[in-house]
Length: 246
Image (cartoon, rainbow, N blue to C red; front, top):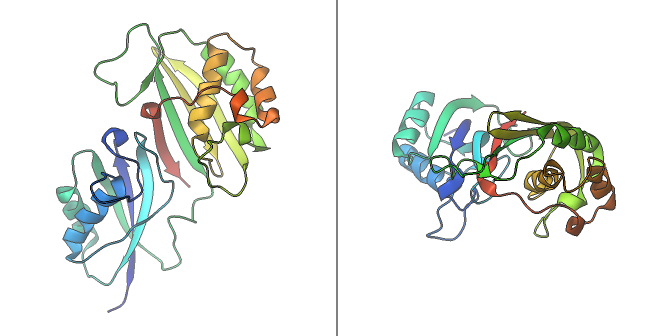
């Protein structure tokens, strides 16, 4: 039988997962649930390759994965059968057969994330697992101005977690903005690649500026200092969404 390569677009609420990547038995992960559901459709084991692995509690609306299989199924069978066997906090949005040189891991040349923060005195009971929260009023305009100093290619060591396994911290920030929409402060960020906790560490640093504890110029000082200890805290995972990989 000839092998076919199938690509999927997936969405999930990460609040009840220990991240995307498969871990030890008994640990609930997005990859584990997807492979179990697709293996049921294939009636044999399926192993996924992904782009943009997410951490515990992080969500995704546009993650891409692929797998190889000799099993003949219509594309709609992979999607409908997969979704039937998936828990309600994961959905397959599209399925395509792709060429054998397609790679979900290496195809993407940019990645986009959104961080959503609920900004009012009282936390949300309804959205507590879907957004982060700050009771202190944030100045989104100052945060946006400060964020622009990150545009371009830089060493982002100041925003890199100690667990990061990347070979270096050089990344190209392609776009970044912070805006307020009612009670929500939203960070949109696009780069060629990201370091471990990079978006959350950037947001934590911007929040310091948003509270008026540091001036706008402090963001550039933190970036140039390349010292994680001088930046803000890591913002909670609940507000982070992987939007797309291009």
